[in-house]
Amino acid sequence: MELTARPPNGFLSALSADDYELIRAQLRTVDLPHEAVLVETGDILKRAYFPHRGVISLVVKLAKGEHVQVAMIGRDSLLGAFSAMGEASALNTAIVLVAGTASVLELDRLRAAADQSASLRALLARHGLAVYAQVQQTAGCNASHPVESRLSRCLLQTHDLSGDVRLLLTQEALAQMIGARRNSVSLVANTLQHANYIHYSRGHIQINNLDGLRQTACECYATVKTQYERLLGSS
Image (tube, rainbow, N blue to C red; front, side, top):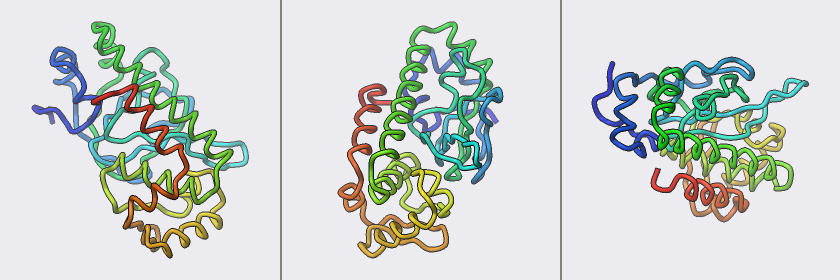
């Protein structure tokens, strides 16, 4: 189905009228099913994804089988910015963390549009840099900050990217998000629940107190938000 109005995605909203017209007719809407694998590390990403709702997790797979999240993409950005500028192979595995919907576009078409427009190329570059900045901050955070602060940061980021206070996140998913063991996640989730910041039951999280989570989160949450605002502005 063709889209006749701009979808609710930050990247698409930030395009000029001329740039949007370059891709408008080829955009399609798809569901993002929970835990769907959109691309594996090293595979060729064939479509760009522009989430309307839901969150995509970028994951690094380690030799012993562990999965660690390095960044998240939601309604403010896209999956495939660097691929559209020439790097066809995926640098990370992309998995749907929070189910939702997205606009999709064949990467060949997005790449061709970027070849025609310097402003579109510049916007793709800024979005790619914003995700890269998140990757760097996440690496430092997971290496240096307590589990409680990291979990609060990730819950806040997931809320911002999905626009929902109700999240379906298993202990395994939470452990991947913050690079911790499941038993550590369980203990910290119980602590946050006792403080009434969240309600957590069998993979269902209800965020009750955003301000409380902000007080508990490390500075990485605010740092990533500042970097995104600097790079993306109103988008």
